[in-house]
Image (cartoon, rainbow, N blue to C red; front, side):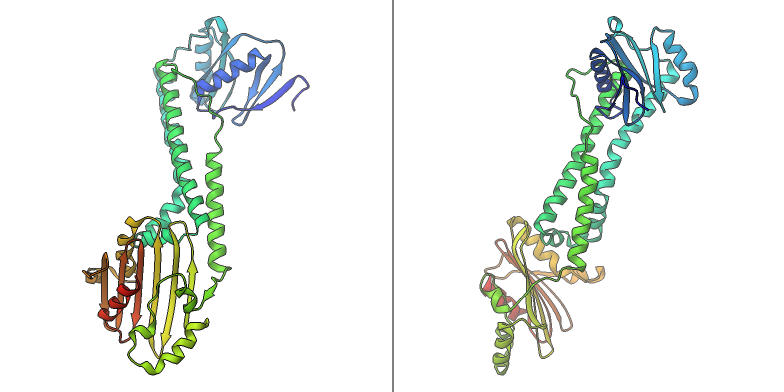
Length: 375
């Protein structure tokens, strides 16, 4: 229980930042706040008149701490308290430039403890981005497609989580590295950076939670809006079934499907950060099935890799070698794959990419001709 003349404050820095915490404690002493006790989260001070003392934080082996504390006290330091390996002493500010002398065993333990903190500095970053890395591993064959189809808010949150995790990891590593030199080599910082206790770790974890919630909500509860093929034609190019089919007797029925949303004849339009215009369209007529994916990528250099990647969906590793690249006038890159009546064709021109998966009697040359015309 905190008494009337006591005040509790959270540590201004993470515990392993020894030098920063020493300076913070010295400032509190000059304000008349003398350290009484502490734990990993906060420090309790007694409010009295200003004291000009210099605190020293030492990392000691808990099993041997009793004798090691006496060794340090014999050097003129006064012991305040401890929490696990964390031990705090003070000395008159006049002798503040002197640090406790550590014997070989004490120095070795401190070195190992600080090395562990350096490893831990990256651990949270790895944990934060682990779900992202696992997802990338699972979609490694279609990584570009996965990213261009991510919703814009998802892209932003994903980028924030990754960048924040990396920056936090680097910052923590540098902080512990400086502390290690200061503690073991008596090397003070050229400039002191008072780093507040970072919330980046929690920001990353919360971001990952938001990403997971958004993904699951969209996946299972939101049904994408469906559009007629004619609606898609107003803003984006598309290859129509009647463009390829030779049976003109079906034209009227196809035209009717084209004007209305039908379970076998519709499209889903999407807009994302990496592909501002994109859609997936389905067209089924008398047993002939065609699915079309279209993307207008924001970064043109992604077009050719994406065009090559799209036909690899649902193709086993043993058959991926059958994917062929062909040269077609008017198109930057064309990839084709055929297995019986199943045909996959992917092409790009500039920043536009079109992929067609067809099951029926359509010929690759006919599909390529129509793609070249609309792109």
